[in-house]
Each structure stands twice: as C-alpha cells, then as structure tokens.
Length: 80
Image (cartoon, rainbow, N blue to C red; front, side):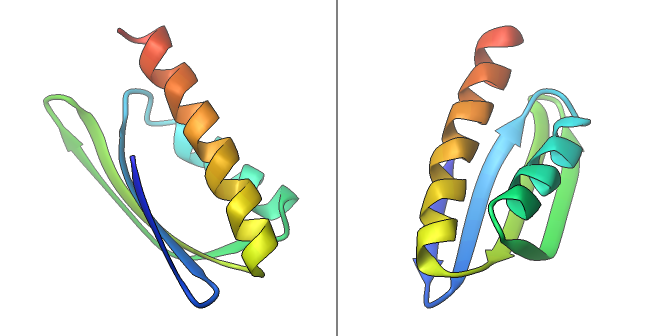
C-alpha cells in the first residue's frame, strides 16, 4: 500500500484480494469523519488494484491511513 497526503487529501494505492473490502473501506472512512472523492478498482490476476482519494482533516486522514494499513494487512494474511 502506498499513501500520500497533500493538504486535506489522502491518496492511497493498494491491491486487495477481496473485492467486497471496498465497502468496508468506505464505511471506515465515514466513521473517521472522512469522505472519498474518487475510487478506481480494476480486477487483475493478482487481485483488485485500487486507488482512492479521501478528504478530511489531517488528524482524521492520519487515523484512516493507519486503520487502512491494518485492514489491508488482514486481507493479505487471510488470502495468502
């Protein structure tokens, strides 16, 4: 997973193994007081290549980024 923060926008790029995980990610963002402005998901042989832009205050984006790392680690461990 790679993440960049510019002003109040967090851009994340990652590969997920379970396509339904995107619904959990959107819910997680909303629980942290963030919203998304762009989602791109492409199915490939190694999973789902995903890119999401989130907006919110810097503290909320930092918490969201940390929780996304944990969620994606669980996804990776479950399907490896």
